[in-house]
Amino acid sequence: MKRIGVLTGGGDCPGLNAVLRAIVKTAHDSGLEVIGFKDGFRGVVMNEYIPLTPKEVVGILVKGGTILGSSNRDNPYHFCLEQKGETIYADLSDQAVANMERLGLDCLIVIGGDGTLACAYDFMKKGVKIIGVPKTIDNDLNGTDLTFGFMTAIDTATDALEKLHTTAESHHRVMVLEVMGRNAGWIALQAGIAGGADVVLIPEIPFTLERVAKKIFERKKRGRNFSIIIAAEGAKPEGGQQVVKRIVEGSPEPIRLGGIGEKIAQGLEENTGFESRVIVLGHLQRGGKPSAFDRILASRYGVAAVRMASQGLFGMMASLQGTEITTVPIEVAIKELKTVPPDGEMVQTAHSIGISFGAEHRS
Ligand code: F6P
Image 1 (cartoon, protein in one colour):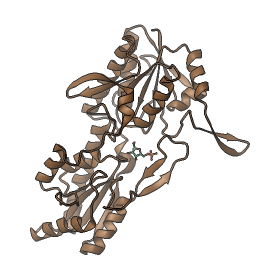
Image 2 (cartoon, helix red, strand yellow):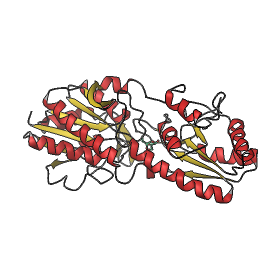
Image 3 (spheres, protein in one colour):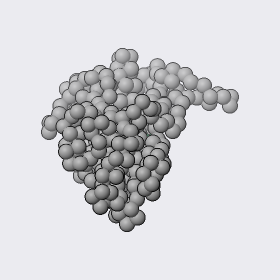
Image 4 (cartoon, rainbow, N blue to C red):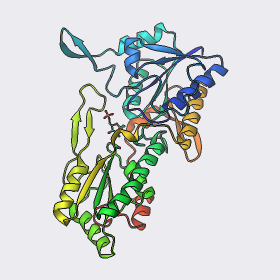
């Protein structure tokens, strides 16, 4: 083992730089060279990379984003090219493999969520030795208790909820905070608990506006003239659909959700007469410096990834199980999404402390 490649793929999140720093420091100590590909798999296809030495990672532990750049739309198997003013899509995966071979890489560490790791898995089938590191604010990756970036996103959403409480109370309003998470409600659920939300709406538990309104009226009867709702972008009404904001052609996961918050706020204003406002937290959840928790988790994952490479544990992903860092096959991580169990302990806890999910038995 002499030279390893690394890339950060998919939507960025706080802690990517902390992982890179840990990888480079650990590799350097073991006499390994590190090559960092730019902008996720795009850099592998285009052969764009930078050598990463301890000098490149000085001072990046606390920085958000990724010094390598990332992309959640460049799929080597369906790569977007401009030719003679026309957009075409081509399978450039063999070109990517050839680039890695030319660089003499012994393995590639892929820091990504389910889309990026699914792509990495396809490269495994072409003989590339892959090590996975679980990343995403959504925390929807199977095979690990936590992805890094998630806890920082929770802190950001919780802070937003706290701020919305004071203005909601002053104006006797309903505030709807729309958060990210794709098809999983982890951010909405956990920030909802931490930030004292009255209603949590998640994709795993379809809601009705009537039940949400019921909760708002119950609060009013108790003299609480305002309510705070946190809605996952993937939340949907019973018998209804998720709200799609846009389709990103060529992306491994082309659907971008968004807009449910506005629909909920409008519907509630009509149903309850309460003045309502919507706040879409958006990419604020992905920006900024990682929390102390995420710096630690990201560093542990980075060190583990290099150790896994040295031990020849290819095709595996570093994973947090309980309090221990261990490994799981990448195949397991991408097999299915890790969504919120609707009858799980976390939902029951939220319900027991008075949170409504806008659904029967949980309103
Ligand atoms: O997967 C991370 C994530 O932030 C999702 O929560 C969100 O749906 C999506 O990425 C947004 O993607 P984009 O940055 O392309 O708008």
